Length: 243
View 1 (cartoon, one colour):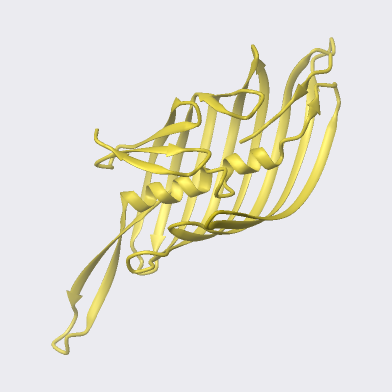
View 2 (cartoon, helix red, strand yellow):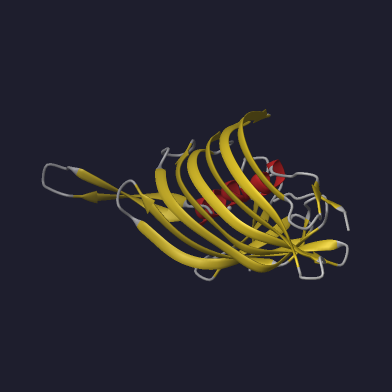
């Protein structure tokens, strides 16, 4: 059985408010950076977006024409830089892939692992990050069911307002993401855990979910957020939505 399979895929964001507090009679001011939900959404979008070199891009860049041939393995390393409009990124990437079958040589899954380091200049922020993922792709009718986890660690500096800088850790997991052979996200949900720290010592630690609402578009829902956020996994565009 030989069928060619194409894969695509690759996830967090935080916002800024400034509070001025008088520290002494000498009018020394201490500035506290509040991490707001809008920028958390922007960071999450940047970690996932294909055009921003995120999770969808990693699964996309690794897109190989893979034959479902039992025992097939592949390892691959990539150093790539790309500019798309005002966005640009550099990525250093390694991946391994293995086709697994049962004792009757019937296709079961493709196991896929990757790590990547990247520097990205995006529309609203600059990102330096490390990410790694482990995923399996199982036949699901004409499509593929993705199961696995992805971890992102990054430093993000926003280019607007006060150019605040955050360090963030994001964890994504899913057992029900469905993609087609072109790598379009069709259905499913990513669970998200994130920790964000500002340069002033403020911290934010929450969890939520990104549910695929329509093709390549996820709806970010964090219970503490006032709004929902619609994220395009291809372009990284973010739209605020009333609950």
